[in-house]
Amino acid sequence: MQGKLLAIAFITVGEMYFGAENKNWGEKRRKGLETILRNFVVIPYDHEIARYYGKLMAERKRNGRPIAPNDAWIAACAIRYSVPLVTHNAKDFAGITALEIITETKESNP
Image (cartoon, rainbow, N blue to C red; front, top):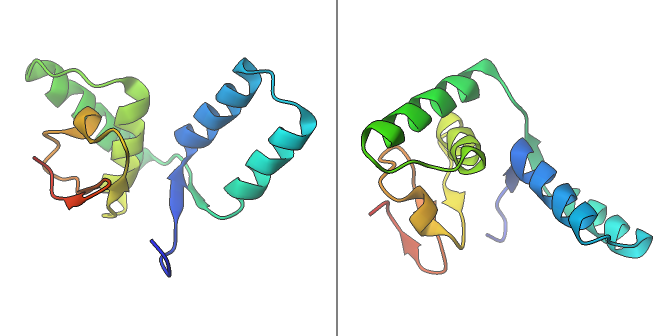
């Protein structure tokens, strides 16, 4: 990912803050999190992302492969901006044809 502009979905930022709160992080670790987050452009909510989110949630439900709401928001952000999604949980996004997944080994969507 060196030399690339790195972005993170707004929902992921919230998940990271939740993790810090849930684990009762101290001030030093919280500041470290905020320092790390400055390395990313945060993809904010917009109506186009919301449309992709709704479509993904409905399609996955119809196909008998429901997706967690936060994962659907993350996928919708990547689809909206036509950027690959980098994850260690590729299986959570399997079957989303409009999504390019990058994991430990680069792979297209299975």
